[in-house]
Length: 65
Image (cartoon, rainbow, N blue to C red; front, side, top):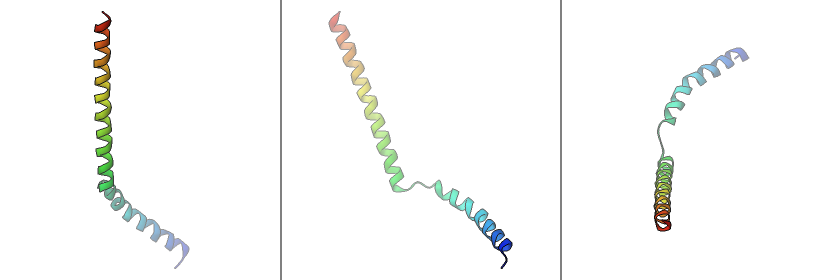
């Protein structure tokens, strides 16, 4: 086989496989789903801490008045 033919074969193989590889990226594995759950939980915890801090600040303001 010539180098030119081999290069074309490699290019055609790559172009045929690329859409399959990209489609596989859409499927989330168990580790990615677990990571998203952890991220969501951390965000909710941060929101709750922020809300608690706001309540404390409000109560301190009222106590000063």
